[in-house]
Length: 265
Image 1 (spheres, rainbow, N blue to C red):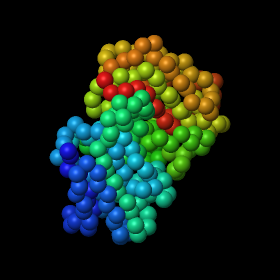
Image 2: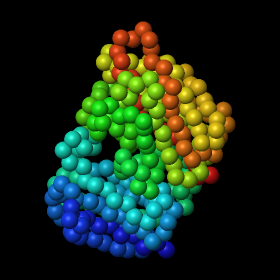
Image 3: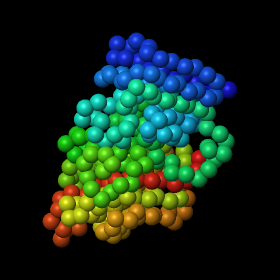
């Protein structure tokens, strides 16, 4: 049995609302969020699988908690631009957390999705990070590539946020899982805001087991499905060495989503 706690704090650390329960916890918070407010999820169990909802507009997400506590800062101003416009708005907010069932843990799923990922690695997985994000803007952050949103026909504010590479040929993005997983399929949703966007003819996927896969891509609005030659037990995957179309005048290829399918190792 795991003890779960959900808390809303202001920028001074004052507790605005809190709830603790065993295995399943729900907190209904009546109040309008202010800048500096934080949502805190804590558990007495380390290395745990949790179904987490920090905002009812964003829904529940299967996550792996390596730490005992997660701090999530409510996004304001420019940081809000990459989030659903209904998220963290209004006077009522429902936060939930529950221990994932055995079936939810064992099922084949997109192991890369985390709508609650943040720039800093705070012990919540999956987690995405990159060596560049266009102009440091939230709408081009690495976390956008694992938030589950596959709208790829434009760029900029939600729902067209993406990972932007700032026109750098050495750009790379990594998804970390925080534990060993067994993966057999990867889906790339490349941004397709043509003619504004360029596109990648080839990308390289590097895995924590030391192997690499060079994958050819096509100019397409559709997802690129990559079936691995054999399932791999990995802790992270990196996409790099992206080669854009040299005949396309646009310097702006980008990634809308990376999905990594498999099971727990």
